[in-house]
Length: 169
Image (cartoon, rainbow, N blue to C red; front, top):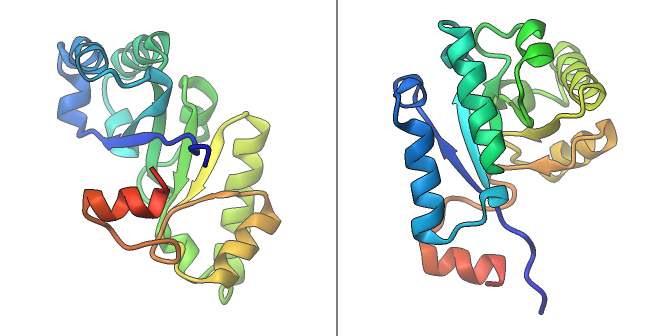
């Protein structure tokens, strides 16, 4: 059976992301482990973007030059700013699970999720919904235009061998 393309998302702390050797370490790891750069996603939190915005932009540009994607994790929980979405060289935003949890019961959460998806689409960013736990949530998100999901509806965390079976690799 043909393999589905897989990506590896790595959460990076603000301290790690700001470290002078961060991008060279990523480049070395890509080379050492033979990981296709376009299969790697570096996930940062909104808090990472609060200080040293020029440094953050520079790091993102260097990662993108390697072919690595940059994602904002837990979007909507910190200091979300449209400025960041407009001006940072991002590839993806991950909608925090706190908005997904009550998506079907809370009109405000549904409106926020729909708005985030629309803004991301118009800025040509991928959108990932975090914390999807039910088929109804997954279907509602797909209807809104968000087709990338993660959460217990699909699988709980798995040991490597079980993941390989699950992913068919």
